[in-house]
Image 1 (tube, rainbow, N blue to C red):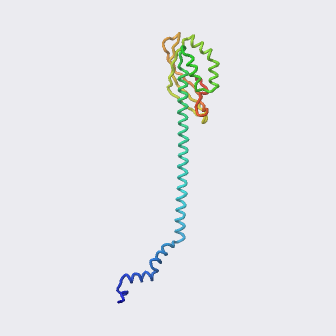
Image 2 (cartoon, helix red, strand yellow; image 1 turned 135 degrees about the vertical axis):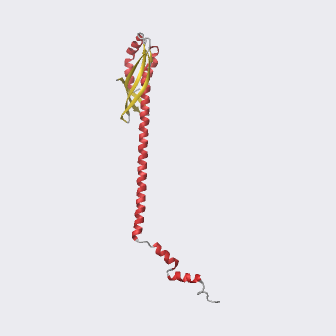
Image 3 (tube, rainbow, N blue to C red; image 1 turned 180 degrees about the vertical axis):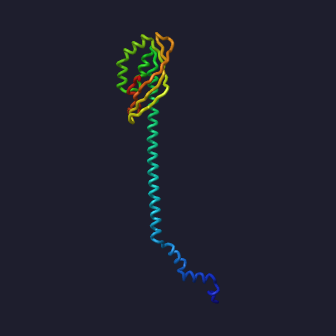
Length: 196
């Protein structure tokens, strides 16, 4: 056997590595970083976690605000529809079917408003039959104002075509109404209704 250590280039590389600390020696040098760089990386990681938490909180907060806004818009739309429907029912009547009219104006109201119609029914019936009144109402637009989350005041602009014994041809007239709507559990009820 001959000694090839002097002619074998791999053997010289292994000796050089052993002298310089070998592959393991170089790896240990890389692993030992300065305390300043470890601190910098730690602070960067902490800042990234804090920023992620802040962004997640802001997203949740914005999502909650958006849901609340959607709920308010849905409530306003529902309140406007309730007020418009009620105004149309109250402006539409025929002296030949007053039972249906009074049932319609009592439907979807609070006990207080329903009671007002009960007390005025006989007098209104007499006037409407004597005048032979027939009317049709149409809602043109509504404006909703929130008093709080459960009470709204709706201004209704409507038109009404009316005919009676004195005016057999329909006469149109614009009218402005105020309709108070309030939440009662899961439904919206008309609490007050008046001309402006």
